[in-house]
Amino acid sequence: MKKILSLLILCTSLSIFAQKPCEIDADVTDTIGTYKSTKQYMIFERSFADNATHVFFSLTNTNNVVGLEAQILQSSPDFIKANCFDASSRIYLQLNNGKIVTLLYLGGDTCGNLLRNERDQYSRIISGGFVFSRENFEELKKSPVTFMRIKYSGETIDYPFKSGFVSELDKKIYEPENYFMYYLKCVDTN
Image (tube, rainbow, N blue to C red; front, side):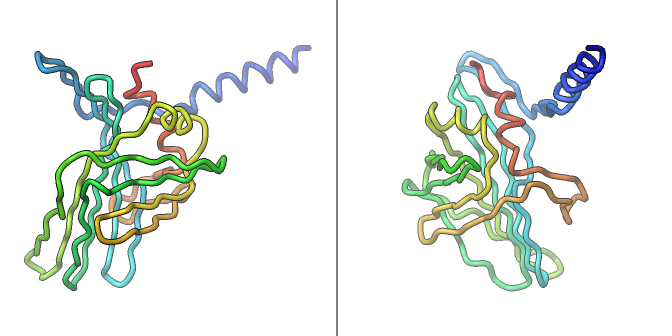
């Protein structure tokens, strides 16, 4: 009996410590309403032959509407063609349980910004806000994400998720598959 009780206490304490703390970037309440946002989190990284792509997510809650801010950063010594967001843009997330969650783009048409640094390296940054329905939101709390597809205005690009990786950019450990399971609680009001 003591062994079973000890095992139960150990499992309970492990699950308590395994939860990720909320890292809030903004928490504002004023006469217009409320806004809460988590810090950016790297979801995807690909580096090969001086070409790099990084995808960052940040969860938001604007007047009790939960959303997702996506930022895609590309760098290359060569010119980077534009991938644009428009009214038809979507993010599709395939969950480990087989379900697919669709996020709808909110905002105007944008192709981001193209920058060139002093080393003649190009960088393109595009950001966009997305929302999902309540049903999809609940599925994200239960199952890891294994795959993401972003539908831009002109093409669709796939981004496979990893269970974890050490970023070449900042040397931090990221767990993109569990991102929503860990951090949706930070902006959910229910």
